[in-house]
Image 1 (cartoon, helix red, strand yellow):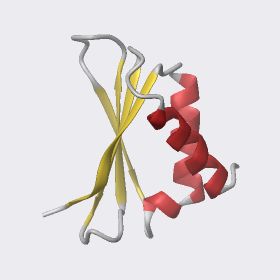
Image 2: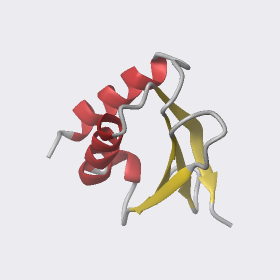
Image 3: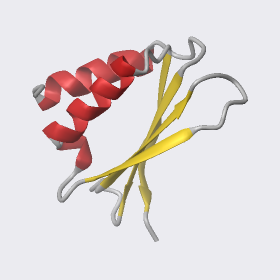
Image 4: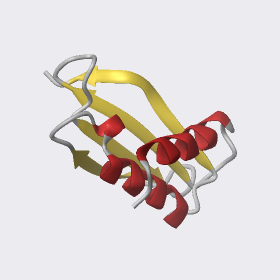
Amino acid sequence: MMNVDKAKKRIEKQIKKGFKGYPLVSLAYFGKTPNTATEVVVTFTLEEGAEPQTQKLVSENDAREDETIQSVLVKTIERTNANTVTEVAGVSLIS
């Protein structure tokens, strides 16, 4: 398993590249408070106009600091050969 900081840096590096075409992986964090993301929704889109596939990962604590979840995100980005990785800023509230 990958160290959480290393995983986060890898993901951040991909996000900073900006839009490079498809496949596209989008990450969105959700939580009951703006400070703790207990869920992350990963959306994978193979090509423009394709039906997006989503996967939800749930964490007891903050998913952004969860080594397992961050490692899964890195593996997902690698496995899908994503050209673009985007992230919704902050934590969206679960109502």
